[in-house]
Length: 402
Image (tube, rainbow, N blue to C red):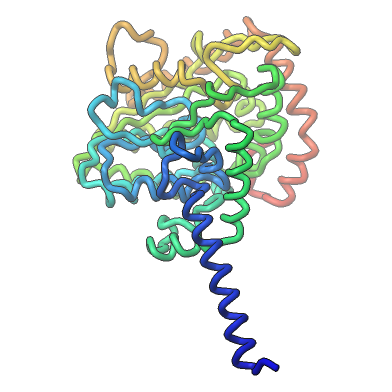
């Protein structure tokens, strides 16, 4: 009969062997692409963005070989391609994240600046929803170095995790299915590789019904946090001291998205935020371009229900296509180049912000005259989701949304 010491030796041998096998499998498969490429090679890693992609992106930033970084939300993850001519000769990484907030964006920017001494340019997308107090860190942020974890701590918790093992198995299954990988090794989320299967009209309605009209972290219980604006001010000052060239812009959301802001009575809050970020950009000598104004791109006609024809500029109201992002980059790069439509990308300054807001009202009136059906549809969706927001107002008494 075996002694207790023998039983314990067998037990710990099995535990250590199992742990080693889990770690080895997770290292070889590396589902979040911490060390291996996302695309190409023996395995592709379509799940690198799983649980937010903070872990993958922070490890890419930590390699220290970047000259340019793109920061912001999912709106720029799939629209600003690091391969654009504006970034020629620069090792550029798109670190834009799903469900981000400006605090996370600043954390990523500081991390990138600290680990990449050759960093020369930072492109920062400013989203209205990123400045609500409701948005906290998301997904695998807490397991990354951004949350103060050491590189050894990140590696060990990742390799020895059964959650990672589950992702490893899923990665093998995805490879057997041969599904295309949207994510590129430069961080760009190329939606064109695997476009959505549902018609555009349904996508435009769903993004509102499933997110912006009902989610407390979007517009449904919005509460503007001036502290986040002040944090942006501090961050831009730091970048100026490091002599990093900063490109600031407000992404080109579709006019339907702007209409939701208006119908939820957030227009005055939006204008205050717009004024604040304009003032901060000017204070730090950074040019800020607004692409969300009413223009022929942001008012693109949405196909009728059932029509599967893809739109030229948008996937849905919150996310523009790479074709739109290409024009954004061209404007940020070439500024006043006459070949870029003058109405796409308005530079905001403290001197013209009041006029710009007035022109915004005029643009909305023109949109309502030309596409009254869209205004009516937004009204229907707002009424349909009103009970959800009523419940949210009881949970969040400081909500500024109707």
